[in-house]
Length: 262
Ligand code: SAM
Image (cartoon, rainbow, N blue to C red; front, side, top):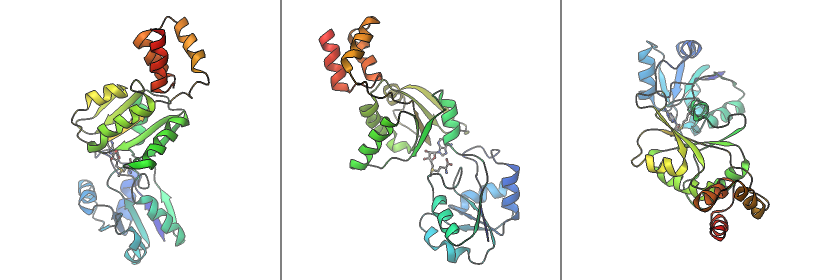
């Protein structure tokens, strides 16, 4: 029994490897999140392999659905199966059944967004979709900021502005971010700037988004010492306030310190 995870294009249909096309041809069935969407890809490349729907609602019945087959290719809507989609659950199950699981290298949204961001790539953390609301969301945001690494997030267009607002609270409005939109598609755009600027830029977000946040420096042990350092650099007023925020001083503390010096 063989399950091969096949990464598919995140936009541009040419972003698929020769090996992926061969596996899609050779497999007995292509299990996929959306048969219409994967059908477009298969038709584009003249691949006649039948498809079978296996999405987040049906993945629990995967064993029964896949039982007639010995060689299954699995594709999700776009990108690499297993990254923020039902692929991870299918892999867990397939390993439980003793299947051989292979993952082909290929397209995913997080890597092009990260490398095009211009932010540090040596150490990064992938967060995927944040919890939608509540305590868990707040805790995850704080934990992310404490990590001190570049962070990559997925977000839907209708939640983008709210997420930028929440990120501003934790990271400060001047924190560097890259917002990658519609990667590899006609309207591809990578916006690079501060969280505040991104918020002002994406007034009516449309399309698919990846957010890349620069690493947040660990909060200074002594804000007073940092204050002396920044004053010695000639900073005052708003510039001092912004610099304090950028160096991890909490907003109200930065405000107080910069006022005192104003
Ligand atoms: N498995 C996929 C991968 O490897 O990237 C991710 C699946 S997840 C359900 C879908 C999310 O990926 C979107 O909401 C968006 O955040 C991101 N995404 C997918 N395609 C994208 C694209 N062309 N441009 C920007 N973001 C994209």
